[in-house]
Length: 202
Image 1: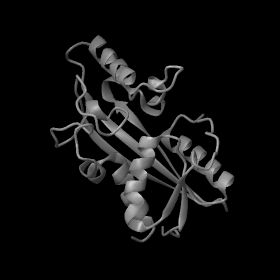
Image 2: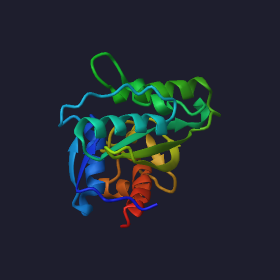
Image 3: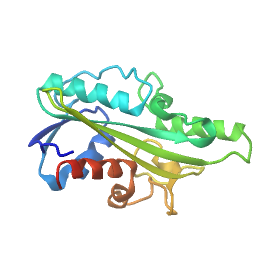
Image 4: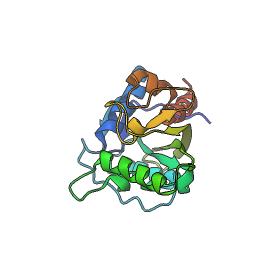
């Protein structure tokens, strides 16, 4: 499937960390990006139970609201021993009522793992689904996964979210310790973007 490469693209996110990563991945293409937050678009309710479903909701809302092609990312951490949680509720585990506290979210994951005992698997994976939506109703999905292991205590101040407690498979550093360019080369988001770029013919 080949899709037209837009000249302008709405990034359907209000998350500054996610926006920075997506802009970095798109930078070589010369696509002018603007965020949904920058356009003053409201965040739609994410009512689906899958990454794909929630990505579609965000991309469709942004495409309709801006009248431009929109790209949404729904991603999260899935922990093997927790039955795939936090999964689509990844951001919810950071909610405090006064904003998101990712240190709290990481502690919640670790406390649940410790409650399972020392033999509990620390295997986990980051999953990413990209939804590209056009104002005329066309859309496409692209998925990427990055397996790894959780560590405690968290390490590194780079990245965002659960990055400081996640060591990708085949590496020794957490995403929070890695140079951003190194992370961009192997992350779940990068793997999904590789499929998107292929669909754009580049």
